[in-house]
Length: 481
Image: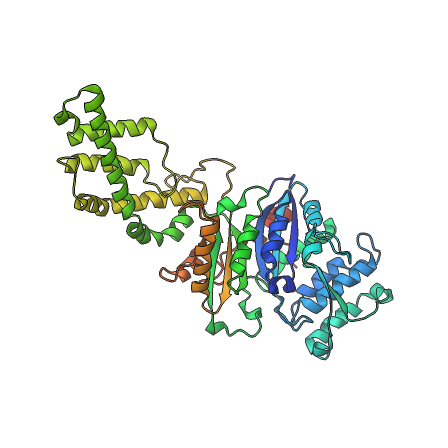
């Protein structure tokens, strides 16, 4: 990571996740002059020191960065909401989003906003933060909660802070972030330290759900959504939230060519089946163009019909004209080398320029592998920004970042596929730039998880995870204790 870059984080709170506010919060954060570089789910396990060490970084009796009343408000909130049970009665899932940028801490702080009782909507807390009146009675006697309260009592200077009335008035900050440079760095190292013990695939933290009775589906937000200061990734997450599922894992990744090929190899049979029609349609267009050029040669130039309408002659003229006047094929269109092969095959097979449909069908069958491979290579170029053969960047600096999320719940695979279809109708540009990929139950969802090394993969998570990697790049290696 360049020395001029800062690293900052935003932690989406359990209640914000429970209310499906994650997408809206991320959209607001991505308006800042920052780049999302890591994302991970956490759920502090019983007995973990995660909560204590998070609070320790905030506590400062000398009030050098944060006033004591503000410290008490934050620490009290963390103690009551980051563990199980908690006052909200919801899962203690946390989403940690890590950003880089030349002034990342200030950018994130401004996007998050300050705690205030004044209603406003120009920052995240103004829009998504709330005040509540709630009862702690339901968990007051639970031993885990009592243990966390003893943590609050251990901060001596906070005992002098007077509590406002009523005592059961709590606040919901929606997002937490590093208030100072020191707290920010300490918390980033904490996320790295507990990345695997308290983070990753957090399905077990979802309350009232039988893990054996639900499905998990993976969604990948594609690179075109991550252009500079683009809130679209958040909007897409909002779109999937309507499926009524739980986010149980997330990560930011950039695919290399080999991994992209391995991941999308499952698509080749689908491309062969679905794109055969593309070859037949293009062949019909080629013959139609050849007939048109032949007729013009006869009408305008006085060419002999037998010569002008000879398939080899007419197709050769059409091919030359296409090279001069036709635009480069776009996503979902037959690629140039496939088109050239169509011309060659037609020139060999046709005896006139009025062939039966069977000729086009046979040609499509014969060229389906070539066409599928061409689309496959286009997909690899798009997802990685690199040449599929050499692995070299095509346009250095082009955004090739993706974000993978796992959604868990009843009938998750089908539910996400339904949302994906609707999403592409709204946001999709073409068959390639269609904003998102989702697990297809007809392929192999488990293999996809393995290839990307997701936290839920049967073979284990790929390490280092994105949080560990970016924090180590920024802060240096973790010291042994």
